[in-house]
Image (cartoon, rainbow, N blue to C red):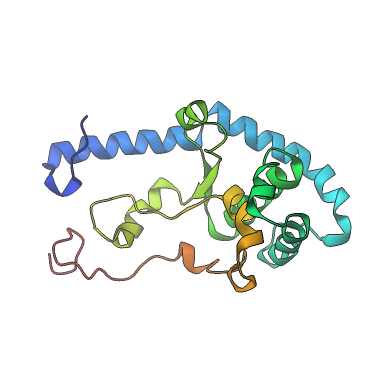
Amino acid sequence: MEWTDPRDMDEDEYAEYLREEKTRDHVSAHNAVLEKWLEQQCTGFSAWAKERAGRGPWDFTVDSLPRLEALIRDAFDSPAQARKVTDTPLVAVAAWYLGEVHNRAFGTQWQLHPSFADDNPLDHRPHITLPWERREEFHYTDPEHIEDDARPIYSPTEILCNLPARPADQGLLHRISSRWEVPTSCDDSSCRYHPNS
């Protein structure tokens, strides 16, 4: 199906569009590429945590994120330095841990479309977002109101790699809960979701 602005679709086209998007979302959350990455990080977590026991506890709570942030900031002087070792346990397991904290605290889930990994495995890493069932809650967040799926996307690997360049007040706790909050209004009267449309 050729892409069309969802506002210009008739009812049948829109239903087909949603079916395709839901299928893509399901594949992104359930595929061998993602499962392999998750298994590798989960398996490596015990050794990772044991090596860093003095900086823990590593209990998957939001309260542990300042410790994770300090670990990364102490290890790297720049984003480029961190990106050089994204596949090592220091960064990869840390990214998995960061994602798991969000999953447990905010109900997010891991995703990675397998075609992204095939096309460019170095630039496309697993990310977290909210499940498909919560997609409609976020229609207000797209500034142009043409994207029906405006769920936030959070890339733990990128977030960690960028930490050395970010100010302390924009670390891992910055916007941690507001990122996943549902917007409450829409100011664009042409949006199909505007209260008066």
